[in-house]
Length: 196
Image (spheres, rainbow, N blue to C red):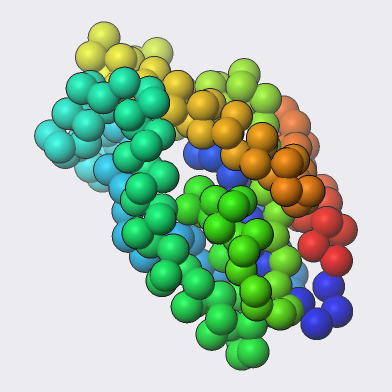
């Protein structure tokens, strides 16, 4: 990690990006940011104790096919890229940053010509992603309509990961599998090893 000032952690939803990035930032004494805070795509289509699913989010997942959902999120990430690049450039010569988010698309990151940066993508088996999404959305207690939206979100997340892994491998970039019950500290160690 000598000289690295920005560590980028990409991956699909529910692979543990935020948790690992937070642990890594604490370990390194860096700031931790999520690309979601720069501009959020429709978001997760399930209710939580703090929020209901907004009608536009429900409509987004209910009406679009999986490939259309992928096109929509990738277009959003492309529009977001200049803000991500500016953030990376600012921190590459300033205070350290662990930046995480699905918006860290491999082909964009690979063209980033900024010194003192490293990038790693987290991956997880489809069963792990499914279990995490269903647990977060309280799938067992959800209505049929809520389950339908969660299943569309899951399908989009799995398809996103498939495309992401293909790009990461084709470009020779680093990735770490989070496993089923792999401790956060162990995943953080693996990310550090890949980023070095």
